[in-house]
Length: 141
Image 1 (tube, rainbow, N blue to C red):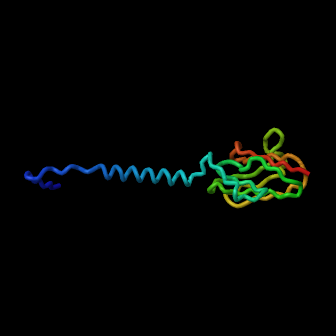
Image 2 (cartoon, rainbow, N blue to C red; image 1 turned 90 degrees about the vertical axis):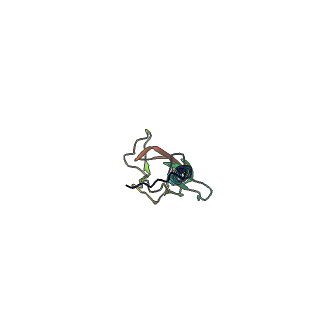
Image 3 (tube, rainbow, N blue to C red; image 1 turned 30 degrees about the vertical axis):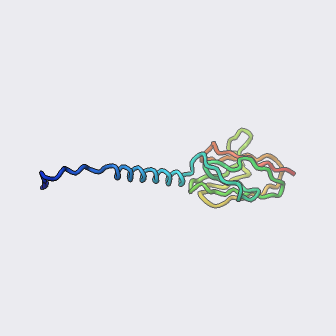
């Protein structure tokens, strides 16, 4: 490699500040973009646009976690967790998956699951893929 020298010219200083600022800005932009796209455990769905009788699955939780409906009402679970698979599976009094669950959506990444409740009672459920995700439907006469 050939390097030309000019003894009569002062040696130019390397400019690193603009590159450092640009790198910092790129890193900050990448962080903000990833944070906005993640489903984060603290994320919750806005209930402003959710019709009554609807449970949103997002941010690794059921929102709302408890809902009360009347006999004959239909509850809809909407899967909105950025492609993360979940299910809605009925549980027994101990919190384990019920032997014959009333609620059983199967695994879904998107879409909806609906169930019409014909008997009053307290129906507990969970996501079997994420056992910390639980919910309750109370059905009144």
